Length: 108
Image (cartoon, rainbow, N blue to C red; front, side, top):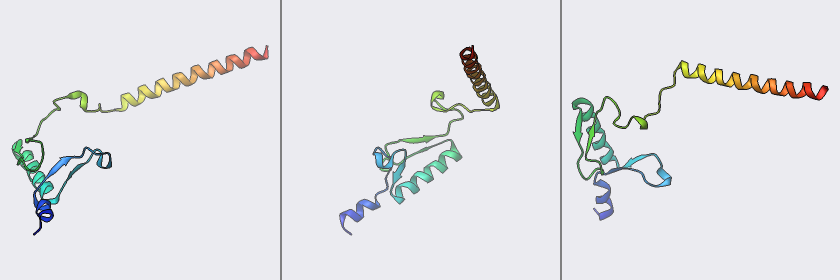
């Protein structure tokens, strides 16, 4: 077995930093399988240690709420939809009145 085949067998996984794989988790099959197993273990036990050779991360934790609430987008509900619809209708009516007002003044 040559060194390139051996390197492909060393498990690894990482968060991609290149534009080609933006917003991707990448790795070889062995690394991703070990990462999956660690995620399954964290789901069952609340946390799991990651082998150092897989990724830069040390462990996986299960949290009930985000440690940084600002990183989670707010949930949009029906109240937000009604508020946006009301704002949109208000702007439409104001613009409509403005246009009719200008047309009325031009006729005089």
